[in-house]
Length: 156
Image (cartoon, rainbow, N blue to C red; front, side):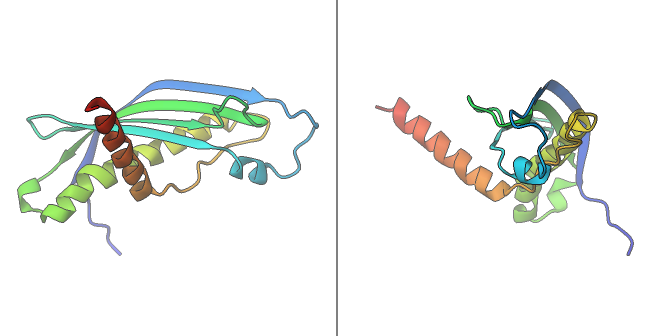
């Protein structure tokens, strides 16, 4: 099949921060690295900004195993900004346009940062950490609740 290019273009990607730490296991060798990785807590935050020329800026931060008591293995945090452009937005259905502006841009940022995290950890003692698939719709629901909670707290 011939792939059709999307109207969404990533114009720029800038890695703003990256932190990598290896935490040695207390019990010696970890037999099932994948099970260890599956137990890592993952924190994701993001923000969209739109300018008058139609550019979409997305700031995304991903933290893995960054709590106050991290597990053995890898502790990582990465932050990046992506600048996106939608070609011919006037020719698109509003639902498709909205999906491109929000869900697709965040998905692209997470996928690009997934690769960055894999590269950061790939030379480590436990080989590469691959960020699992993320439910982007749930991230937006959480963000909406957080914003509503903050607004409610400010109005009191």
